Structures are given as C-alpha cells and as structure tokens.
Image (cartoon, rainbow, N blue to C red; front, top):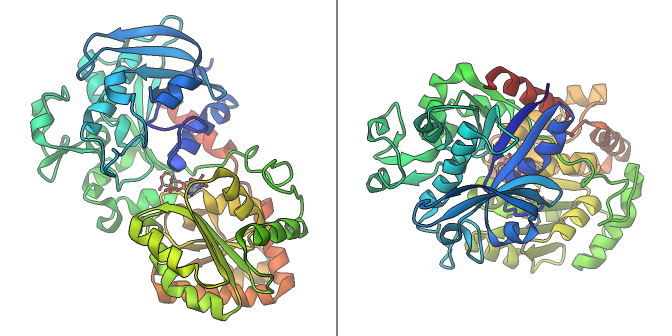
Length: 473
Ligand code: ADP
Ligand code: GLC
C-alpha cells in the first residue's frame, strides 16, 4: 500500500525558486511516486503560487493565523499536486520570498513560516477530506516548528526533518515565543533555545522522528564544530536517527540529448557546437584553453572569492571563465571588475536558459564551496560532460571521483577535488585541470565517465521511502 506524505517547503520548482531546495522539493514527488509514495507539497501562498494554482478546493480554514485569516487550498500547480497556505497578510508580497525591499529578511519571517508549519501540523493531525498523510516531511527551518505544533495538536503523522543548509536556522527573539505559539517549557538547551534566541530549526531537530541531510559527508560534517554552526551538539545527540541521502537531479530537465535550451548532444564531442555558441553569446574570443563556467549564488558559502584570487592562474594558462550568478553586492562588483579581462565573461542575474547554455558549453564547472550540503551544479556538469572542479566537502566530496593517480590508472575519474578551500589549493587544482586538458585522451575518458555516472533520484528515492515506511503513523 502506498504511503501518503506531506512535503513542506518554502520554495518548489518550477513555481518559486531561489536555490537547490526548490529543485529538490519539486523533484521528490515524481521520484517518490516511482517508489510507491503518494506525496503532496505544502507551500506558502506567494502570488506566483496562487496564480499557478488550478482546480483548487478549500480544504481547511483558520480565523487567525498569526494575524489574519487563512485557508488551505488543495489543487495542482506546475505539474505537481500542491496544497497552498493562502494567507495574504503573510504571503501576498511582491519581490523576494525571503527579503524585503531593503534587502533584509522580512521582519515577520518567523511568523510567516510558523504559519506554514502550523497548517502542516493540522494536516498531519486531522488530514483533509479523502487524504491523510502518514508522514510530514519538513524541509529546513521554515518547516522546523511542525513537530512542536503536531505535538500540541495531539500527534498524528510521523515527522522527518531534512537539513538542506544549517547556515539558516530560523532565529527568533525570545519575546516572540508566545506569539509563535511555542511552549515556554521548551526554551531550554534541550529544546529550541539557541544562544539566547529561539531557533525553528533547532526546535525541529530536537523533536523530529528522523533527521536527514542531503549527502553522507555533510551528515558527518554537521556533527563537528567547524560545520555544525552551533547545532553540532544537538545533531550528535540525535545521530541514531540521522542519515545522509544524496540529492539527485531532474534527468528530464537536465538531459544533454533532449534539452530544448541547448543544441542537444549525446557524446562528449557534441558539446563543440554549444561551446562555440556560448562564446558568441558571452563575447569570449576563440581559444585553445579550457572554458570554465560557474552558475551560483554569490555568497561566502560558495567560495567564489577564492576563485577571484586564483583567476590569474587560469588566465595565465590560457583558460577562460564565464560566470552567471547573483548575491552579495561586493562579490557582484568584484566579478564585474574581473570581466574587464577579455577572457572573462560575467552575467549578474538569474537566468535559467543561460544556466543550461553555460553547463552545456563549458569544459569544466567550478564549485569551490567552503561548505556544500549537496550541490546540484556539479551533478549537471557530470551529466553534460563538463568536468567538475570542486572543493572536497559535503556532497561535492560524495559525487565527484577525483583525478588521482590511482583513479586515472583505473580510468574512473570524473573531475578534480581540492582541499583545503584556499586560493592556493584551488590554484593547484586549476593547474591540474590545465594539465589534463592538454592530454586530450585522458580528458575524453573523464568526460565519458562523467556522463555515465548515475545522478538521478532512483537510489535516494528508495532511501526516503524506506524512512517513511519506518515512521509512518
Ligand atoms: P544552493 O541551493 O546552495 O544555491 P545548489 O547547487 O543546490 O546550491 O542549487 C542551486 C540551484 O540554483 C541550481 O539549480 C542552479 O542551477 C541554480 N542557480 C543558481 N544561481 C543561478 C542563476 N544565477 N541563474 C540560474 N540558475 C541559478
Ligand atoms: C542547499 C545547499 C545545497 C543543496 C540544496 C538542496 O541550498 O546549499 O548544497 O544542494 O540545499 O538540498
């Protein structure tokens, strides 16, 4: 019998996306459908989500959901079975889903996502007409309060909390505890107290039946002070219920043989046309050196300041760089300045089509992250024969086979890993890349290996289904 699961997320592709969480939330329902899981996604009623909603029915209502009325609508959007928390006082805002016009978090973010969690808990407790989840799958801090609210409601579905990025833990000041409908008795080190504040993620970590994160290596890293960001102690205490399950990618959207956004190709040789087109589009001159690409949020996590420091090395070896990204103003400016060099092209912004053309046309994709729970762009790179050059951390450690002497002798390498995350180590990796580039046979072999590596959801969907089966109620 299939298991019903409510997946609770603050973003979900193709409806609303700022990063990889959206890709994962959007891909899980289909991936898990194949593993006999009946998943619906609960999302905040942002304008874009409401606009996309079809065949919606009102299945739940609340007079006062953190300051105004709310309804839950059950319908379809973007090809997915979704439920939407319609609460205009919280979600009917233009612009970024997390940030106000001043570039800072919306001041009521704790209440906005508490509202999402509150309705998720009600659905987990009561169900809706004709459907009752056995499991509520909570993603990141935005769904961290679900287990608390479910306990208050008297229990119901089992809970799984997935950590996509511990850097965001959903802090709130102590004077909001009552307003957020949380029990003061849980404001302790064993509960949701975090350095004198409350933390929605910590609330979930202490109560969820199971915890996962998005790669096995990040699961280990999270238990260390260097990566746990003050939550490593809680996670160590819960290590018995912790697992690392790798993200997959949507193999239909990211398929070099059928991708409508590029000149489709089936073999490594086929990327030449895309490379020529990419050079024409970005204004890069013809060159015999490797064309390296980056598609990324521009934040400290992604280590792109290391790339700026190591860039002279790449250019000295005849390489080129094409970057698509947006984020911190200082990094945006630094990349704009770097683009003064003729072999560097930079596009500041968010552009789905260009992201495909970069990954299809590049020779290598650079992901020098300081930490990376999973990372998706290195997986796109593998699938498109665009060799990943990655820091040895998190999911980057788990998905790339480094071109070590042993791996090269066996003919199994798929990319290059470097450690530690410093400009020097990245510079050495770039040198290695250029050496390999000069050895066309070795390069072609690596591309072939990369394109053959499984990067889909099959294995991970089975792993999630196995956890759901254990905690379903
Ligand atoms: P994170 O979630 O930390 O940003 P991931 O690698 O998991 O990192 O996911 C990032 C997702 O966002 C990928 O699908 C990537 O292609 C996409 N992305 C990031 N920046 C851009 C951009 N500027 N334009 C288009 N897509 C982008
Ligand atoms: C986060 C992480 C990224 C991961 C994504 C999806 O945004 O930074 O590494 O791939 O979530 O799980």
